Image (cartoon, rainbow, N blue to C red):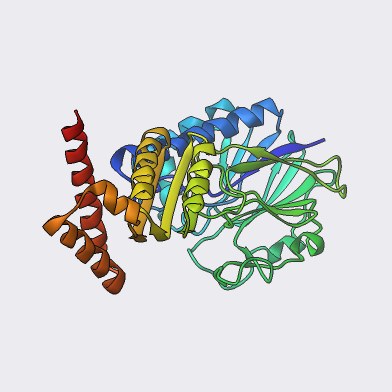
Length: 373
């Protein structure tokens, strides 16, 4: 019974410029570590091969160090790896793949599918039909030749491709690099291993996207996985097992705060997230001064606890209650300033007014605490 690991979209060399240096470095390192986990999984599950369905690299211009580290990370699995060029690392005449060979960085058990055709792994019981991208965008279905490709009798026919199954994925997916939805049937494939869609997705009983093994964006589409595939014999339905591989969880929340309980529920949800979280939070609505203080304290704790948290509060208005104002003991001129900032924020939707009001409230509270000592 041939068994193989299906993975794709490693995007090695990807940068994380929106994050600070420490977090960006950790997210980059996680992508190397996930290759090591994939190798360990392939060994643990006694896989006969690892198939990588495109976009091993994020760009043709990745550093030599990145190239060497990628192939060093595969050493935990001594069986064959087949790596297919995708749209980010297409098999150009001069490419990241040819550079890797010049660097002599490629282990003997790693095979590049740089040309269309069949790679037969007789010992593994697999015939892999490959449709590499030789340019970033194509407008014809490169898997069509699978229909006429012959393979040795008795070997499991597995297609390996990178692109968009037509009429199945979201409307915002590019129309380039199309793949016919019926390809597994008309090409007599036992399994069609796809890359390009970064989430795990089943197209039909023989066609799957595995998704990226380490999340790299805020999109809830079943990322951070690989697929272990068993095919008992040619023609049999494949048995596909989803295996978690991701180190970090990415969460993007868009929340509107209206009453105190909204804030309390939000902070409870934050507290429930694991430390391996990467959080992008945008808040709208309104919050009292007491609520703002509670929010800022929670965000400060989260910054130290999570891998990363970024919070956009530009749409969140400060609306002090009468109790807030009384607690500030802001009378006379200071009280007039507080009221002016409240009005300016409400009338002009001013970020400056909101921040000024928060700063002034903090100063007044600090002065009150000092006086009470």
